[in-house]
Length: 228
Length: 228
Image (cartoon, rainbow over the protein chains, first blue to last red):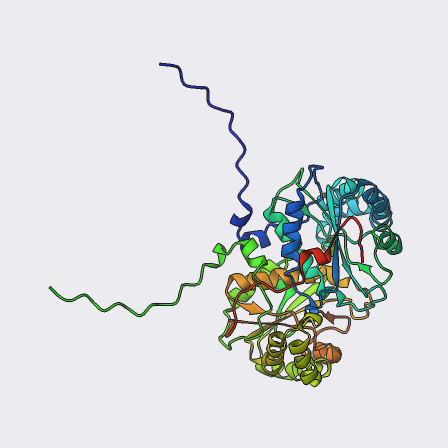
């Protein structure tokens, strides 16, 4: 008798198949993922998540949207610099103040230290995400309609949830908008187009699929009438 | 021997348990549902879908939102009249024109005859939906930011998907906004609040969970650069 083969090293738990993830579980465990690896994402997966995205709401089913898949390193690099400019203006330049507040009065600031550091990491590395999706609304460049996004952000959420099914993390960002005209030009968009977000996508390199922390439900839900 | 008992009448296929619905299936089969029954929705289900909603994105995790659950018949009736006014102004008054175009040049109009009739039905019956959710952004009444909705419509999509898990249909509507100030007052909202939608919710009375029809993916997706 030959001796039994040595046990193989334990392999990591296999990722569940995309179609096995339950809807309710996904809705409760898809936080912004800001630490992403450089591992490429197959084009057929990008297509699959976009095919889920476009099933989201579009007012009057007008679908006046375009979805730009950005993989070109040079394009990402140019836009990343503009993104970092936005990050630094709004948050990065207030680094000490925000981190100190997150430590000393955590109940009074929305952003935790961990969230700030993750967003800071993303700003420094956003071009390393293998693929970005830029949802665009055509004919909307001059819009001042605060509800304009009702015809795209639901679809964006479908995109980020579908990505989750394939093990891909993502974040909805808008910090590029100080350079809207530059981004429009870099992507070859028509003059009447409005970029609605940049969504970097990749396999997570840190963190986990945990439930986003939010204020208690009873603080934000009101029955029949708002009360302050 | 006794004769076998007669076969019972076939019972309808049992609804799957909410937690059994797959994410990818839900993303591909949650159309706007505009034919809703008057059957009440238990409060604990309303809470469950709102708890899923608030896990959606909120810029900087600010959560400056409020979610009004409207069940009061009198409040719904008042707002429904304003909703119908919006429907008639934008679509209802063009009934013949829209229906004729949907028949004669279906490729050139986004709204099918079926969609028009469903939306017309909703306008006539919206107050009969047992519950509406009105997502609100506080401090946003004067916003002219076309990307404002990035901090609420993703959560709204989570709401509508979670509703689907419980067998509940919904639609994102904004036709009340010609009476924004009136709706704000009817819901007791502060002067700086902006209502972002009205989402009537109920058990569907007609139709099915079919995939929303959209333009082919390759017409709306662009790789690295937009091309017209």
